[in-house]
Image (cartoon, rainbow, N blue to C red; front, side):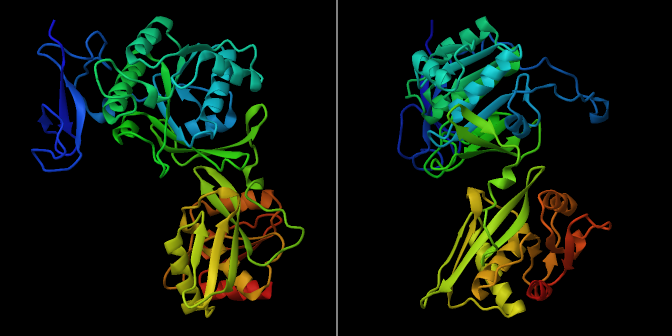
Length: 455
């Protein structure tokens, strides 16, 4: 029997070398050689496993029959929202997040809920023993759970177990602990993660099992390992949140079976993670009376409108005033301050400006511009905005106020939560009035300052 030979391939140009070198002999890139396996002639490391799909003839796109994917709800409404309605047979999900954020807790709860709905589940742990998983289950109130547990890190044994047990849903916790005996590199290395993820993805597609892989993250918050890992899977979820806060956000950044940028909101309790049905309450501070420097906006996270409070603090600075934002783009803050000075005559050039999105939420859409400017103006002048006031809209460099997408949905959500006054772009003003909501439609930043002054 001819054994496989270990080679080193360049991640930049694809060239190979019989031994590891600091510099690729083909393209000259440094530290780009990673270990891989060169199979002997006639041998395929995927041998023994069926193809992903039978060969099909070439045909026009119009003749291909398209059907929706059947989804299975997990039993956790917020997780189903992020997944697009539930899990898909043969789908591969990658979930990343900081250590201790609650990834294993959430997935164990989801597996138990799926098992109670008649689905066969398997939890494969490479970081804990079976006894540790059982202790966590008891803390979560899952003493009678019948979820199957396997403590294993070798890929070949995992694949054999998946083929023998035939579960509907399997969790791999985590992919960085899995190793293949065909490679000599350590678990968690680029070669091991890429090879193991490829085999598990092929097993999911071939056997129709839904596989959820837990991934570690780097210090910068990105998923550890090769970027190809995110390309292999169908869905990528990020588990976010401050470990000092009880609230957690699950965000989809890739989903072949649903919308991206959806979020699910959970609260960490003694009995595990519980879905939050009204997440807007998290991001709104409860002030006894209106305070300067606070303005509420409506942002969109996927299909969900969320009310978020934007807080600003403007204070006298030194010769080099600071501009600091938390949850918002810092460069956009500097741009908005220039627009506010140029077109509205409000100068903050000698002031420190601090802006924060309450609740730890991150807002990436420009619809927050209007709320940021109004919060800054309110703090600078020491005048609070009226109670029940909100604003949203993008502000351009010429001082114009641009519309935000799906403005009517934002306004209806605000009216449902009791807000009574709104400043919105003129293009977002609804044709029919919204009951209980007084609207002020504007198209210039100067008009916004005048409207707020008269309120």
